[in-house]
Length: 216
Image (tube, rainbow, N blue to C red):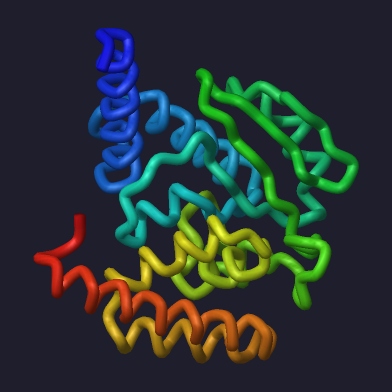
């Protein structure tokens, strides 16, 4: 391993530590992630635009400490144009103004991606993206409920997102998982079938890890 490789790994690990701290101990380190979340929170409160945090940030919130490059937020479709108009007021740079609401922003190098309520999360998804209130965020900015976050992951159609769900399920108690199943059963039967498969996969991984001395 070259000195350059060592520096790159060290930089990546330091960034991951700041990212996790921003989720678990908001505001304590005043990192770029803290400041980006603070800017989003200020916008959400002052403009009356609820924002539900999903994606990798929510994965960290629910126990899977992995790296993510951006902050994903769900916003109501009716607030799409307002977000574009007011974002610069809070120091948030508009990178892409999407006519369908899939906006891209940036704050101090941290990417912010908007996921519009009511859109299809993937071409073959049987349900649309739930709004912030359905995800448990009625005002300001906040993390989507676990069951809401799982719903957004199941709808993406990506293997990567299914892996996120498995890792979170491994750290989730049975009662909470059952609550998530009840929620998903009301969304679509295909989502419930997929979730049940991921629950089995999580249990199998936990058993294998136990046999080998715990998670690596």
